[in-house]
Length: 608
Image (cartoon, rainbow, N blue to C red; front, side):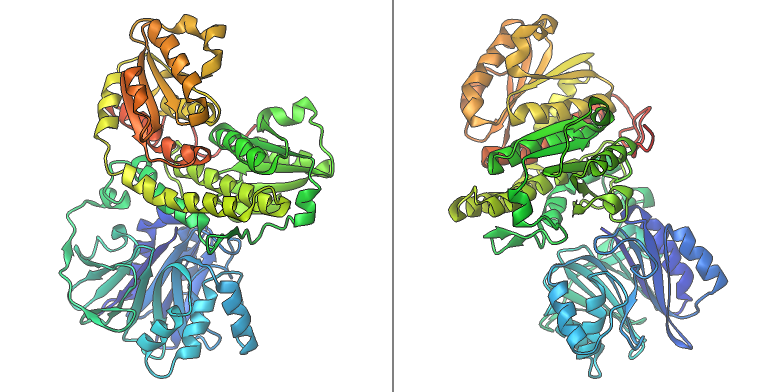
């Protein structure tokens, strides 16, 4: 996720672009840049770091011109650096491009362009677009852009400024948001509403497969085939703070609803026609995978809970034994590590101090270390031998939602990738897993459309002081994350228990009216889970069950049942997590808490 802004009109563009980027900094903040057409031609200024770094550079070397594009970056290809910052230009400095998304076939395109003599100056996937447009330019920038994107596979939103035709901006959308703002004698491009809200409230919202050509006097919308589109403008009535949250009340709620997109982005480019898993950037060879005798997973907090899911996924698919440790404990138990150990460290930020220390310890003992992280250029990403990046985009709310669920997708991909090498799955079984995995984003999106039941249940538990989650197998692992989410934002005391352990002491805590949330999505364990539900019901508990669609027998035992779409049991956590996040969210909101910034907590824990 990154931020795009563009301007063409009668005013100086530099300050408009800068202010627009500041409004989009929540979408990306590891580098920023602008391209402006000046009297000297096309000029670029870009800088690693926050937008303030770019602003300082522009104060020293200002750009004057009436047309420009800008970008604030959340790195997906190439570490944060000046060279990798957007905009990117062709070798002749005649065409500049900013881009959000992922170009899946950029390595193939790069190789073809290098054979044609084009030189690449960055590690990004975006640079291929600028060279492709240059290659196709024959006097019409719109046609050149259209021909270039016809060769591109992936998700993208693109804005293009050319010295050849400086009176135009061209914008294209495919599976990544882009809007066009309409003013008087000026027009705008934005990847999100806040970028342009200060200047206009009249916008066109581009759909997938559409492009726009902007001049200072007008906007033309068309399909990628060149057919013109007539569309009514949309009038925005949000204030700026609401716009930054895309209309949601809080960043946390917005990020919960962004999970289907995060799932798609984390899968994108890693599934080959539904038949195999491709993990470019992960250097573990089939020979190395076959030589592994054990896997250690190390993480903290929410990432630790994702690793617990990952343990089950990898053990089931590969039959390699997996241990999961809290990073703060890992070094001090003197773990048995050797050259045939794979250590997987999991960290949203890539800067978690305990996790980083565990990584270094593992490397000292000769282990191969893989990182699962959301931040390119982070310490964990730099120091690990291999990195599997999630593509959740920036997460602003302190309580993690889409970063956690994207880690689950990463573990599913990794488990299947390793199973391919070990041949522990035949092609039919692998294809079935992939098909179910690819359905998760749309299933989750459908779930998020109907929240009335979750809100009513939040009302029921919002005045409680204690609450319990129970589950078996993967449900227990997910229950731990659900319990953490509730306690960290609602401040209700909450505990998660393996349901089969209730009779070993925990039942003493159950009394009349105690809320118990029973996760029951694992069908092989259903009968046992129902027995555990009956145990707490017999002591007076009020039971809210969570199950897959079709398991209506639970309605005879539980007081309320939340249903999630049917999928294979291995994947249920990726769907069941959303109603549990929302239950925590609405409970905290009813209690009047600051959901985005819960007390005593920080987003990234960089001290031991």
